[in-house]
Length: 173
Image (cartoon, rainbow, N blue to C red):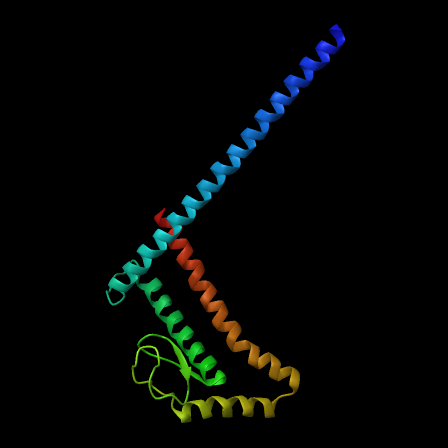
């Protein structure tokens, strides 16, 4: 009987240890998840502060952030141009007041009622003419490479701005 008592005691002690380890692991996971959530919240706050600061000081001549301000402005211009190109291809135009996409032949925004600014037909035609000319001058492979260059450059520029923004955020921490 003594042997069975020792085995029973061992089983009970191992099971208590296993239960405690499971509780510890569960608690660690809960704490890590809470920590990650708070860090994400803090990063969102830093981004919001940076955006508010940028909007308040984008026209200032501060030497400390002048380069970053110019990079943000350039990236915003590229993004806006790309959005317009997408809209032209899709036959849509974005409302300047609320940003709602509307058919290109609409005169007023159905969301906010603002008069829509139509892209100039000459600009749209120039874009398509440039693409047609490039396609005629090169082979299919060269055309594919030429078409991929503009989005790639814009993507790289956007990534550079994002990396620099992350650096500024890390430095503020």
